[in-house]
Length: 602
Image 1 (cartoon, one colour):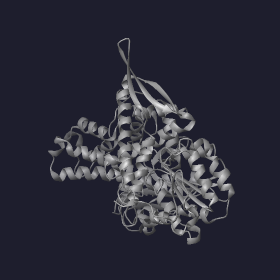
Image 2 (cartoon, one colour; image 1 turned 90 degrees about the horizontal axis):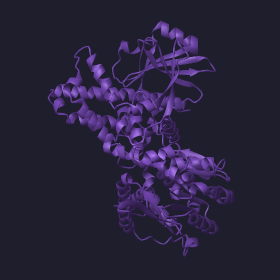
Image 3 (cartoon, helix red, strand yellow; image 1 turned 90 degrees about the vertical axis):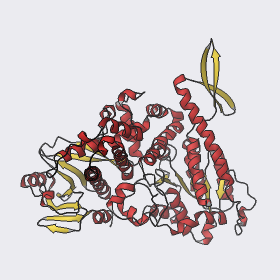
Image 4 (tube, one colour; image 1 turned 30 degrees about the vertical axis):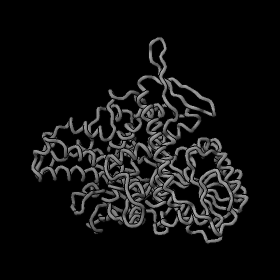
């Protein structure tokens, strides 16, 4: 195992340890009854907090998990090779830092592997800050796990000329580091002429949110370039609103568009993006290895650690856990992941309390069943060929989904409002307008997930459970393949539509991008230019074939007349599909990969 891999594992474990409780559980017998307490030391004083009986086992498991991770952390730290002296950096010889500070040859060794990686587009923001004029602001790089934050820092360090690289330092924050420790090290670095300081996982510092102004007011204002990064996106969002208001530049890494997925990872095709898109962790030929969306178990773990724990850590740190308390209660009962998964699975895009309260039924199976039943060539009722209750139960177990009667906390509208706000802050969801004609007052929103791999992993969990069903196995191999292919094709089709809506909306901030519904039928996407009073209309088809049926709505005179009357002249009619670009009358066929790569290009 190379040292770079060891450092990555150490950082991951330290992040997880920070979210787990310290201390121990004690039991006292009072009046012949057992009472349990959580014993913990705070600021040098010992406290014992009462723990209800139904919370004891969970708390005990979390404390044991923390101890196991701390043991593993010690083993990993013993694997770190002894650090070489810095050689040419005589200025730092003999200095004793309080935190893990790397400079010179040590830093060069740490960043060497990233020289062969391609760079994300958003590195331009970091480059402008590092090489631009001095200012009294810090740069914050934040986003979900495995979206390229630390790699980006290492890559920009490789761009520094030798004389400037000798003035750069990288601080890896670990659990237990305090703001005082960081302050002392920054002061020491400043006295020794360092001008570029990169601080990774800075939100692990317990008092970071309350004391973050230190970085801008003292060091950035004195001429240092301070770059902060970390996984706790919400912690940075809170900091921006409090201590670093108007004194920070934000660089968010969570959303990775298709063109970057192809260019940076070296992987091509909308199907690959649907299956793995959302992180920079897929092997490919140009980047890191491994992916959190390789199967439903890994995706579930990612949702829990990268999203639910992200929220929990921010709540714990911000205003001593008092802000958005409802979500902290949900997390502590182990039910926050359930709510997130229910919303992600519901491909109808409804982000409401009713989604969580309904008895769970796989929307993917329901849609596929309805379409197969209406199949003109060979209709089949798949519900007659599987134990639907058993399959549904298996899906719920894999995805950690609970029905209302199994939830220990009743989900209220406030829970949904808060979760939606947080997932928006994490850049995990985006709302797309849903408009209607001729009843223009019928307006709505659809919620799109920005990490397709997370959504597709749920689809594979459904397939996994169908394949285990004995009743389903009685079908012929041909029918089994047809049903499963149709299921995954239906899901990919709806996801491809979401991806196109999302990326078009983000690439065209000066235009209105929405879905348009009619009493019968719809335009999958409308792109309207309010200034010029023009619009383009689109159908999205998960197909490689060109069929006139695909654009029947686009050439419907009544629909087009209503649309142009409401939004302006129609300047283009398009079908986005997986085949080659072509034209059929007034309708242009666009290849989906080509279309997505064209977005955002000036």
